[in-house]
Image 1: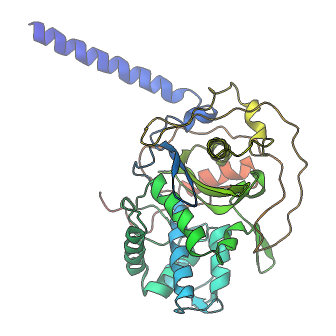
Image 2 (image 1 turned 90 degrees about the vertical axis):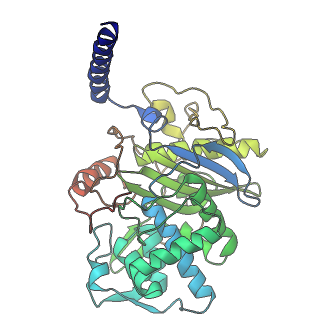
Image 3 (image 1 turned 45 degrees about the horizontal axis):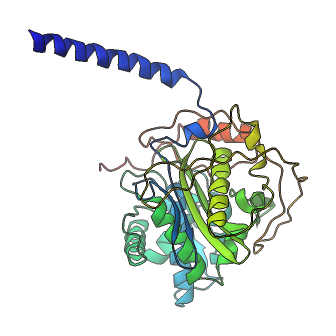
Length: 392
């Protein structure tokens, strides 16, 4: 009888827990709370020259790379250029399969094409999924074969927890990585291809009559940032890998699980500030990416460096209000590494992070303003996957 009562009590507790959990779902998520503490969150900052880890928050936990995948696609392209297997002006033809990829894309029709250099710029700015697939087919013969080549190359770079299934980062249950692996890839792109790294600093890409703005707003928003790549799907949240240099010290950081690109960029800036402080680099006035932090509904705890191996999340710094620098127009310059500061953008109200991948495709990780970001979320929600995710 006693055990029966205990069983009923356990059911009651679980029922109350479900009701309480449902109530939590209805609550609005604020600022860093949606990211720090989310099951999708992880972060790392490492010193680029030696690869020494300065900050580690769940850096070895499996995550979905989204369009950070295109960093590996570009590594393979740079390697093919270095080895003479393709030329910068070689033509990449768009197949019907590649052209069918959902946005973000350039929209080149089957049979059309572009040069390798244009393809590189389309990946680093617009994060074009159709172009990524076309590059994979051009190098590997098929995108599936190219993904196998990407995985093998990643292993040789020390990315032991990464597996690729496509060239773009479109949702796939089996395409996984970690913050450490992606930061390692960002570091290797800089060290292995110093003559190609400047592409990641591209602010605008001219395509026809259009000027395509880079999704990576850390360029210009954070003092010293000159690359690398952003990414977003529902399963991953807003991701970014950033390389920045100050006083001769270069850091590479990665963070996963942001609820908005504004939150993600602000958090990345706070982590890089902590990393530079640990390297003895004197602090600078807050960059424009950090200036809106004081406008959050409530301040977050003071920053704490995260020791290597510690699974607890890094805390976001909330700097004091500073006078923001005026917005400046950035001219189209594909090879430009440093951009002028731009005005800050208001943080949108984020949704509760999703626990598993859903049929939502890469829409790019940053938009020109909050309204566009929210529009992309709602429109992308109904985009079907090309193929159903394979079971884990």
